[in-house]
Image (cartoon, rainbow, N blue to C red; front, side):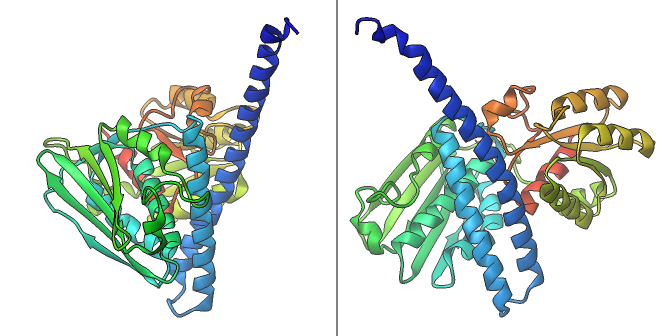
Length: 361
């Protein structure tokens, strides 16, 4: 009995390490699947009229995939396996782009009312985390208003800070101890997002009466810094450039190639590093951007990027992965930089990231 105190420590640590590796692998596979599900369902919705029953089917697929991605994201955040990548962000622009997705997630019986302050300063935050937070709030609001209601989103300048208020019209939400927090074992916990807001130097407060329940977020503003996405003019200028996409998941590869090609980029694609090297040489012209999956069989994305960059130093590199940030960092510490795209990502997020990187001097 006296030897168990120290003897069991190593097996216990090994067990949790094994569980961590398993959860990381599962997250990777799910994120690849969700990239395809969310991406293709968005493309279907774009091509179907509002009255089509098939559009409603596509919306349901997208809604389910969104909820799944929120769950995966939060599980990884709670286990500290999700990378935090703060960059200048214009919250008004971010929310406006997210509104169609929120509307599909909430359904026709819940309306969205917005009031955006045009003087809102940009903030330093992780845009992906902010989007996931809004999606999680929408899921909670949907649960709180089973017979319909109103979700209000507003922004306002508070001195040098940017304040965001999200409120819904009550229902079950009034029965919760904290309006947007855990409730009776159902829904999505927002504990991980409280940590994200603290990392951004902000505050997170919830309150409610039942008739209106709200969450208020305050983030420090950036002075004289334009954190918006690149303009359409800049995007059109860049759309003649060449992108080499390397991804071992067939569905994700086809999705990325389609989106970039639709935007006007010249796209070359390969499903492994060896084919990518051959294609790079055969092309014989400059590659403006290498978009490469980090973890691939035989030769990983960071090794490939290093080899190709030696041949063409001016080529930009954008990494993507379904693995969480700390696992990706083992392959070259790329997740904390602006050269990383976490799966699952939307068509808009892909284009914005590619355009922003190509627009850098």
